[in-house]
Length: 556
Image (cartoon, rainbow, N blue to C red; front, side, top):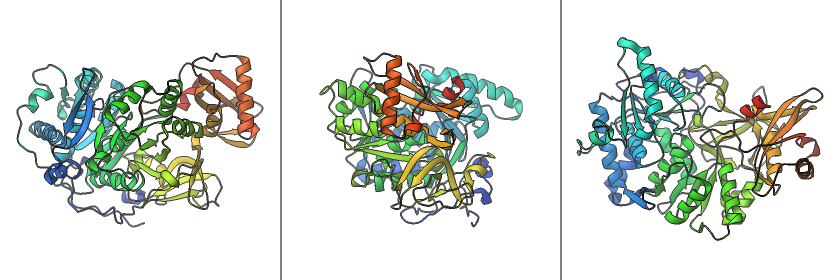
C-alpha cells in the first residue's frame, strides 16, 4: 500500500494531523467517483452555505418541539445565521483552524448550529453523548486536547466538573478549557454572546483531508477510541449510503433517536437531509409512543433508530391499532445492533414499511453494507455500499469460501484513523478495516451477520452466534426484548444464557422457560437453545441503543 498523500492543511493548530496514525497503518482508501472532491473543501459550506446561496434559504431545515406541545420550524437561512453567530463567538474566544471544540447537548437546532459553526471556523468538533459523566468527559477532553466546550445548560454540571479537573491537571503551563452554555440565564452564556454578532461568517477554506470531527466510539467495553474524520468523509457518507442506497431526496423528512454525537445520528438526522435540501425532526430523548406521535405530527418519511426501539414501536402499534398514523413513512433505517427477522417482520406488518438494515462503524463514519427495497434478502444485512469492498477472511487474513463464517473486512473511500491509539494496528491489517464482526457472505455478495467476534459462544465445540439465538427467542409472542451471552459451564465450556424482558400480560415461570426453550429448538438447531433463562425488567444499553452484553456476562 502506498503512503497516504495529504494536501496542505489549513489548520493553524496541527494537533490532529500530528496525531494521525503513521502512513503504514492506514487502510487502503478508494477515492473514485462520486467520492472525488476539490482540494479545498469545507463540509459545512457544502451542506449549509450552498443551500442558502442556491436560493433554498427559506426551506425548512429543522423541525423541533416548541415547548408548548407544538412544533417550530427552522429554515436553512435561520440555521446559517445561528451557525455564523456561534462561529464568530468561537473565533473571538481564540478558536483557530484545527482547535478542538467539545460539543455536549441534546438533539436540537442549537446543537446542529454549533456543529456547523465549529466546522465553518475550521475547527474540529469533538462530539459527546449526553449521558456521559464527568469522569468520561475528562477522558475525551484529555485525549483530544480540547480547548473549548459548548454545552446545553441542562448538561453543564458534569461538564463543568470535568473542565475543572482537566484545567487543574494542565496548571499554568497550558491555556484552560473555555466553556460556554446555551439555554441558561448566565449573562455571559452563548445565547447572549450570539446577539453581538449578526454579520455573515465565511467558512474557512479547509483542505478536504483536514480533520473536522473526532468521533469517540460509544464505549461498550474498554476506553473509547477517538476516530479522526476528514471534511471529505462527511460528504462521502452523504454521497454513498444516503444517496445510493437510502435514496434520500429533497422531499424527505428524517426522524429518529440516535444522538448527533453518534455518527449514525449525525448522518441520518443532520448531514443526510441537509445534503439534499430536505428536513429533519430533532427531538430529545423520547419513548416509542412519543416517537410514533412525532412521526404522525411532522409527517416524517425516514426513521433512524436501533432494532430494539423499532421492536417496542411495533409492539405499541400492534397493541393500539389505529392510534398512530405512520402512513408518511417510506424508509426505516436500522443500525447499531443486529436486526432480528422477528423485528423486521413486526415493523413491516404494523407499518407496511420494509426495514433497511445496515452495518457501519464509527471508524468508517457510517453504513457500508446495506440493502433496500427489492434488494432486501431474508436474513441478510445487504451488500457493500457502492465504492466499498467487503470480504470475509480467516485468522490469517485469507478469503474464506462463500457460506463460511469468518472475519468481516471492508475497505473503501473511508477508513479507520484512530487518534494516537495503539489499537489502530488491530483494526487495520494489510489495508483492510477489520470490524470485529463474524459474518458469512454468499455467492451474490450478500453479508449475513453472525455475531461480534467477542459474542461468539463456543459450547461443546459448536460456534453459536448470540444474535441468532436472540432472534429465535424474540419470535416468541411473550418476549419484548432478549439478550444472549455465554456463561462458564464445566461440562460444555460455555452455556447459552438468555436474559428476557417479557411483554405486558406475561409473568415469569418455569413453564414459560420451558416454552421458550422448546420454541428455540423448533426454530433453529436444537443445540443452540438457551440452557439458562433469566427474566429481567430491562437490559443494559449504551445511550446509542447498543446492548452491553459484557455487563450481562459480568453479572452472570
